[in-house]
Amino acid sequence: MIPAVHLPANSKIKTPVDLKLKPGWRYEPSQRVFISDDGEKFTPTGGLPKKTRIVYKVPSLAQADEAGLSESEKDLRRYMQVILPEGESPAEYLNVIRDWDCVEEAQTAPEISLPQQFF
Image 1 (cartoon, rainbow, N blue to C red):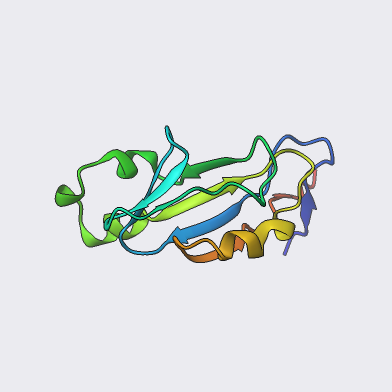
Image 2 (image 1 turned 90 degrees about the vertical axis):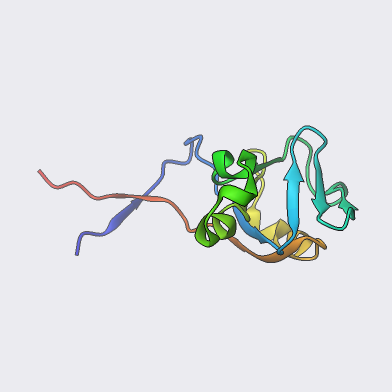
């Protein structure tokens, strides 16, 4: 097995918090708010640093008409990432995100590494 090489300290790649929405919830990026099928709204303010981004892992599924999606696609559209500003540790915000009303589960994404090259 070839050992992995960690990313350089000056890398611009950020480790996000991966989350899965509870059934019946969606995120409206233009309003920066989570909305349930029942009309309940949750705004993820306090607790996250400025310049935090919340994005769908598969944006095309998030915008698709749910009626035309398979069960697997409906499940996949519930997955999102919280991308924190440079210098912020995802582990520090994990419990904050897990406490959101709309979140079923959340964890820090795995650390990215590169393969070791031998010449």
